[in-house]
Length: 365
Image (cartoon, rainbow, N blue to C red; front, side):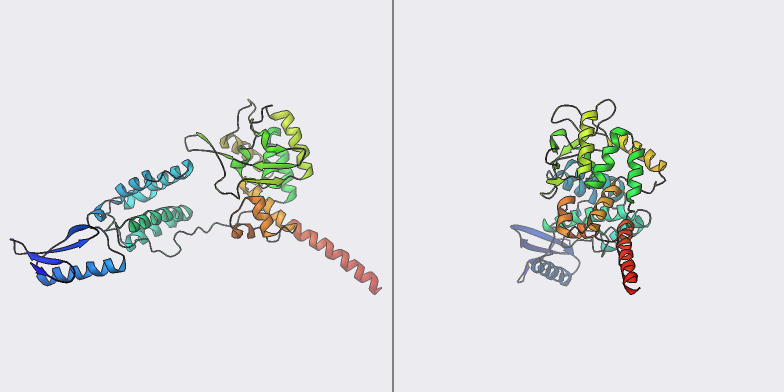
């Protein structure tokens, strides 16, 4: 057996040379080679990988992406139900059919790049989500010493470039409110003037509405799994749990809505069906689709009302911090996107300038 500074090689009865080394508390084989020089060169590569911190267990790295992905998902009890459902969907539909048969060691950057490019052609947003998930799994594999380096190295592949959503005018909001069934008009108001998300609106209860003080408490949201199972959960961040002031006119509407469409119990939901049951996204979307079709704004999603409300709030002069609080944002970047001009605000500026023009001309005369 030949010995060297790192590891050793020995000649087998077959005439081949076996490379051996000690690492991480185990005596390991680095494989067999036809020539002694090749075995020694491979040990040098292994030593360099260990020194650089990119060494991977050769046995573990032979596991298939399919097996590792499912093992990785089952080891994440911290994931919310909706997040777990999304990850499972992305894995089974977009990642594993193309990449699942590769071993972790054999999954190359070029393979990942080709997979992402093909997926992004038809589904750019989905491709970004799937790539981020794959990249997260591969980073875990690197941390656990299963592979030495992540194959996910496509610059910008995990970034979603969503198109700018449309903003409704104040007149559009009024028409949409009128077109909605009376029991769902409050949804339009809450989304626009209180800038609530759909899940926050569906999770709102009688006890969350403070009529005397003109406030709303956002303490939970109500979402649904793909099979229709409702999930009520607390906000993901501290910023999501908040108390916001309600415009006075909307307080009157809320008070009237509570009297006509909400049960007497403190835990009774604000948005319900004609049978008194908590409204689902399907029921709400059906009413919304009819309303936007009636007013000729089929380009608007329900979430665009929140976008509209935050844009209008920014137009009133609200600071980034104030927008962050009202929207329940953690990052200032999310709030800053609303601080741009709107047609309504631009008209107000034009009207104000018109007054200055008039006074200027009178002074000249």
